[in-house]
Image (cartoon, rainbow, N blue to C red; front, side):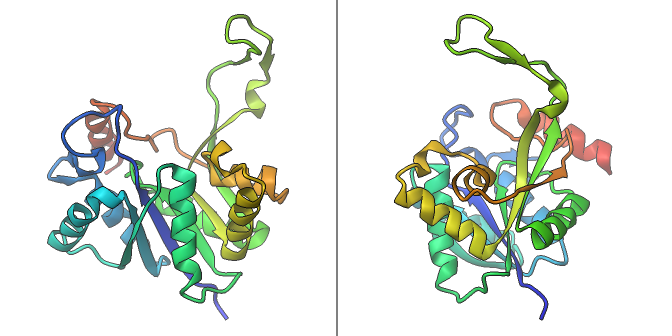
Length: 237
């Protein structure tokens, strides 16, 4: 039987570095909010059956409004998030666990503030997660990487070809990502991680495949990033 493919999209943060009266997911990218841009781009991926949105509890109604007004497809539920990314993912997993998903079903986790969705990268994520159990989108670092034990002096350089910068999507067999989060909570280390692939690799000690990412897959963090995204979008058409 074919494995179910679903997406969990994170809009739980408030975007303090971005500024403004509303969280950055409601800022406009061209003619629509970033939230709508991300969800529309993800919904275009034919193999994704269902999309679940994690929202800051304080902005649930605003999230519902955007989804309703834009008539966004495939959205099955809006889930209240937590104070951290890891906590928000954990709350999303708790919700999904109640839906009787199979351990072998595939869950794609996407940062809501990465609206650039490459269909090929998504499909490669699903293939890698199906084969290995976990997959992380990443790009090789183009800069030299320095290790410093004290933040004041150089302790050493890391080989650039061995350094990758993690992006999303990150995709997992459902049973594996749930087990990783549960073990991290049991060990009281969940708050130490901001990346789901790291939980699988470092806490669960399971292999994680690397899916080559795209340098244009930017995370919108500060003012001005919106213009860069729109320029990328225009270039990619």
